[in-house]
Length: 198
Length: 101
Image (cartoon, rainbow over all chains, first blue to last red; front, side, top):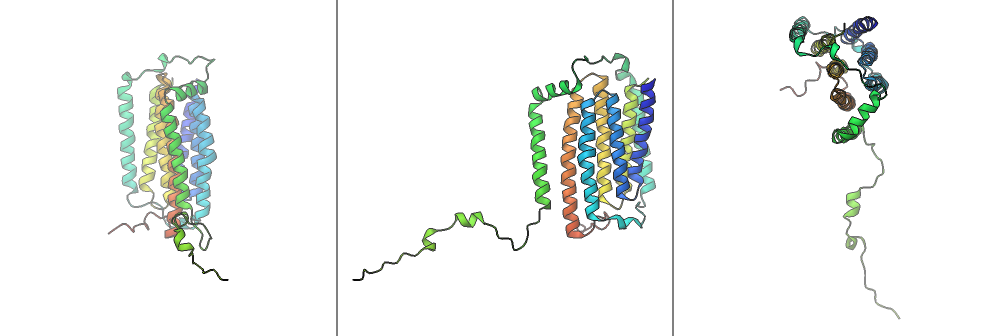
């Protein structure tokens, strides 16, 4: 009973904060609402016994990604653009399409409910093996190649982000390695035969 | 009684909020990127719900990789945004029409 109460109250908070992300005109308000919806989804994931992923969601998303968003909003200084209406003329049609999408999804989910296993068949995980231990064991044995690919994707993201935003300074004295390698020693020094003078 | 359908319905609602947000927003690419994050959260909800109700850890592994890719995507997207603002002095969706014609 208490789980149902927590689920319904937290999911209504999640839906309201997601709507706030969409509807606020000031991007700072949207970012703060998105932080609220991330934290609420983390709590809902705790309800589903995904403890490690809930902590990772809060640490990585609220701690890193949303701080990055807020930094970019701060640096770009776009708060003055809020005087015009931020919604375009297709907004009613888009809301209509979105309602059709959610109606179709909910219909399919509840019509096909006999195909899904119900919560009565859920077997509790063994309590001495925590979720983090299980996930780590699985991740470092069966999914080790995918794990390394994920690490490579993160490396790629670092390189791309730095190379996109790095602006080389003018009149900076640096070495040009290719010119240094291609130096011909014969052009640099000229040997002259000098007569020996007595 | 909390069933799988409750979680799937919540995921569907969040997903359609994200879709609507992408379509109706016409200022600000930053809010469009936030709506992309909402879509990813909705999909992750489905994965974790199926993982719990089927007692299969593969769903949580998949969510882990989705989080990784989403973090990389946000970093690259914001870097593109900064480079764009440096060149064009705007991030208004309506103003960015240099590829048109």
